Amino acid sequence: MLRLLLVSRLLRLHFGLTKLPGNLRFRAPQPPAKVTGVQLANTQPNECFQASSGLSPTNPLETRASQVVPSEDCLFLNVHYPSNTAGKPVDGLPTLVWIHGGGYIEGAGSSFNGEDIIKQSNRGVVVVIIQYRLGVFGFLPGSAVKQDGALNAGLLDQEFTLRWVNQHITKFGGDPSKVTIWGESAGAGSVLQHIIANNGRTEPQLFRGAITSSTYLPPQYMYNDRIPELLFSEFVAQTNCTSATDSMACLRAVDATVLEGANSNINLAGFFGTFVLVPVVDGDFITQPATTALRERRVNGQALLSVTNTFEGTIFVNQNAAVTAAQYSLDLFPGFGTVQAETVSALYAGLGDDLFQNNAIQGESIFICPTYFLLDAFPGRSFKAEFAIPPGLHGSDIGFYFPGTAAPTFNNTAFIDAFAQSFTSFIINLDPNRKVDPTTITPEWNKFDVGNTEMLFNRTAAAPGAPVVHPITTPSALLKRCLFWNSVSNLTAQ
Image (tube, rainbow, N blue to C red):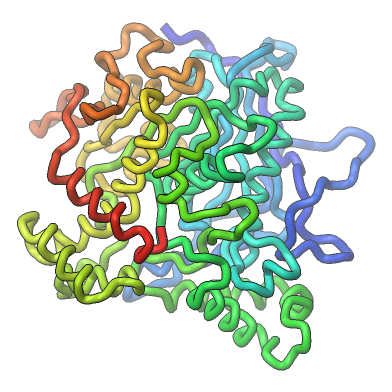
């Protein structure tokens, strides 16, 4: 039985600066100046500048129903912690750091309420919701940035937050030795990046547990490859910096709204359902391609819980386009040739029509198979689940652990508690079998290993539906397709 909640929160904690008279744009974050006196911490922070995802072929510019103001000064975090009636924290609690998704071009901490997680943990965790620079502000690639700036600035913002948590979370009742990082989509992709950061030898240990919901691993090029350099040149052109003797100085001098406009334009010009400004292999923080690092098991963290949704790729594929699987793979991965395209066509031929195959190619190559690569890097230390509640689309699981974002599509208390508390049990104990509430309906989890067993979270078809939660064996055909994607990671730049 879960107890009555007493939760305190501090919003808009300024953990880093990206804009100063010296201009920190495209540089690593710096600590903010110390401020004396009492500071109000009761309003949501500015969100980082956003770009359109470009997922709609008819109206790609999405209207954002948000009252949170975008700003270049956006490195804030929100802390939610269990407290007594006087607001004093409970001491020594495991801590969750949540990293939002959004294709590395959109999203904000204000969308997520840490009290949702604290409720499902029976007041057993501290929750930190973070923000990081997005799009061109956080992921401008190219050799010029390497020479006069910081590549992967958005990832450095995240690591800066983790170091802040390591130093300060005890003030809010958290235990810095019991930190778990969790993200969804690009947030889960960020978790993957921190797992492989610094050759898997980050010091001090910034987290012990890692959770990925829909691990996102798009092509991640070397910072000076052809495509990153083309992207840099396009930003220079769209900001009228082409004739400047110092392109980086020019980009730092232009108004942020000019960069924001170029940000949207360039993202919208990308292939349908893709995001062009993503992490790169920078040679410092990220030293090698993700799949290579995972294959060599060069990882940070002690344990992993990963969840994928049944139909991860559907929302990222143009459902009105008539394209063969071979052609779609060529469009999705510029490094592919005819041989690879024909292999993809043969692998996916028996799954359904062209559209279904393309949905599966997108979902498996970018989200599902990278999750299995990640699991294999934690032998005997990982757990895997599939979220299959219809429609099983990418992102449809979020409302089950953050109900403030959207109402759960299957409003069944037994199911919601079983699913959500799998995460909180892992955050507290690094093991979903050591339950927060022993009465939840989830059976025993098996560690993911050569047996390839994972937990299915689904429902019966007939209304109103009943929970279906039990272990399953990962389909061998899926694992065969994942072996292919692993074998061509040098061509997909993953």
